[in-house]
Image 1 (cartoon, rainbow, N blue to C red):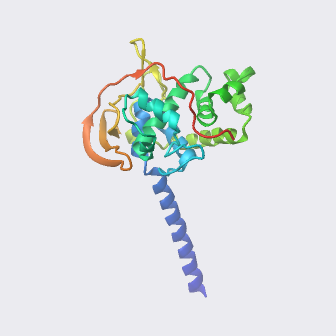
Image 2: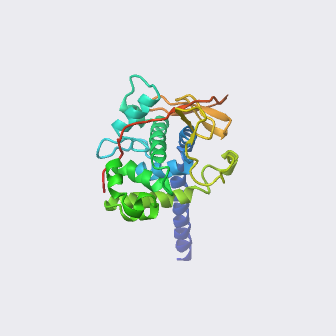
Length: 269
């Protein structure tokens, strides 16, 4: 009897370990492309990963009820805005089932929203609410103290689903911040930045452009590898996302100042 009890205990422990390993593997398998996209558009990688966690649970094949697809559940309008901003011709929405391209489009859109609300005490809750429910609803909830106070704003979100969405991502963001990216992959903090929290887009000295405070690459085939000056080449062809280990130097790039459009991902509530 004691043998059976011991065997059952071992089986339970092994099952728990295997489940933990499987979940960790699933959660980390897209880290390279998430990190590459976040670095490109100057968004905190931990925030991008938290959005991926909430939107798709890291399932690159995920489909939303309103046509959103992929890791960050990017809808058709947001995808077209990203493609236009990057000068991509003959772009098809279905290409965003590729995790690399999806992370790029979603991070671009999230960065655009963070810039939109940069004058608030914390732009992240406003940007997340916009990502989920759209700008018109965010403007409707921004009254009184909520115009600039993010805590008041969260309390005034009228859609229970959107409020849970924002709160869950904020909590997950706090979970990821100390551990993603790993310390050996973090660039030295820029002057005046403590290395914690979103590194939001900073204005370029040349009027009419914006740029993140990190090195940028021309769109498409390079992902963040080991530090801010070396990148692992990525094959971001739709449906593939294969990684090549050849390291290539970075190049500078600029983003347009205005990125118009009010498309959003997800339904209110």
